[in-house]
Image 1 (spheres, helix red, strand yellow):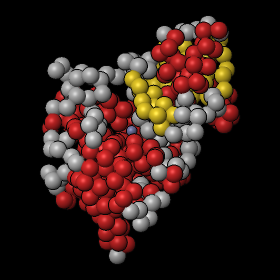
Image 2: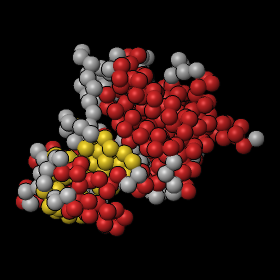
Image 3: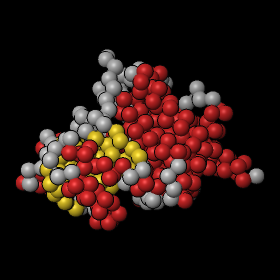
Length: 369
Ligand SMILES: [Zn+2]
């Protein structure tokens, strides 16, 4: 199998980077569709529109319906054709960006992702996560190409809710652990090959940056300030995490995270929060995991406020019977858990989740004392 590494065409990050949108987007096309919701438009609309129009671009302003459903992507794709735009710019959270990517793939126009929260690695990836009209996750789809431009304004990210930033760190924290599992198994990544040395190094860098600067970066978002730590962790959450998962591969942490939304109690959680608990499950599943390293990771998660127990997930006292369904999916054929260099059964998964909850409880207790 070939080694394959995929990446966005250009990544631009910095304080007030949005004010450079006109020049950057203008290099891709002259008729631009902005896709955003009213709330996001109220925050960044004035700056962004001034930059795009100041560069002589024609802007078609479209409001996002709120969920990345196939119907919404088809509606946006039709608007792209009717209004003859050559670039679509998704501005906002992962669902808006994912819909922009899907509509661009359907119509062949260029795509720009402009995240206003650093809550996941959607901005850099080639994937769309689909939801149905009821808000249930319906799987994901790759478009084979990554966004032409990722534009990240750290001044905007610093103003976003802290829990979105913490979720982004959960999504990013899993990257190295999962890429490392795939690498040991020689499993394919999500780009259709095995991991390059570059992907593995970036995944590890992502982990290092979070462990060193994550807590300080979270404080920056609490204070709504842009600091060197915030800049580093935004890059980890958005760029390194995206490159690392797509060109490195995923394993149990994401498989658990993909299953948790099936519990109604978890609907208030963001993807990265669910990955946070998935990481601890993976740590408890892998007999090769040094105990000190596992404890360091759990303690870090507790320090930044990621869920580490069933109670944190909204599932206090969840029974083994209820967990069995997740066990079957994770231990079944085609699961990301096959990307470990050891077999994973449904019972292994249920036991690892129970062990993760117990470990989370114990580390919380120890950190308090
Ligand atoms: Zn993820």
